[in-house]
Image 1 (tube, helix red, strand yellow):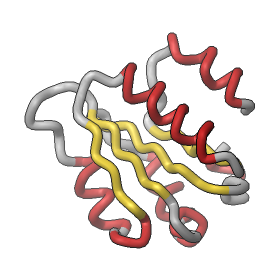
Image 2 (tube, helix red, strand yellow; image 1 turned 90 degrees about the vertical axis):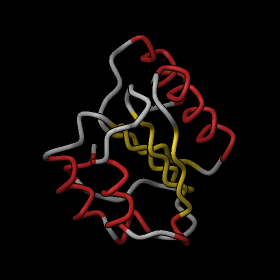
Image 3 (cartoon, rainbow, N blue to C red; image 1 turned 180 degrees about the vertical axis):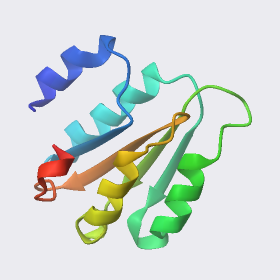
Image 4 (spheres, rainbow, N blue to C red; image 1 turned 180 degrees about the horizontal axis):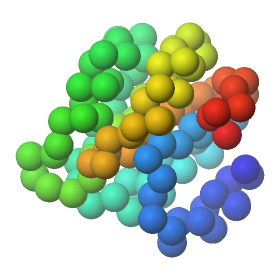
Length: 116
């Protein structure tokens, strides 16, 4: 989906997860800001080079202490989401109702029929 189409969907209820991909970091970060403006809870940001999938899951499934849905952003510095695509697919089968996961990926999205 192009950024303009994504921005136009911002009146809808947020999905449990987003993969914001592309070469230009401006559009990935702008997409994350649009989501932050819509979600009433706190934002937690991880750098993929400094975290693990279990830590991200803990954050996703731990409800916010101040209420609202939590926005959990994973800035992919390498191939973290590619390397954990199966775990991401598993998470999406039963996503946290109290959080929205956002993956910021430079380049193309992981090739998976289940992540589209």
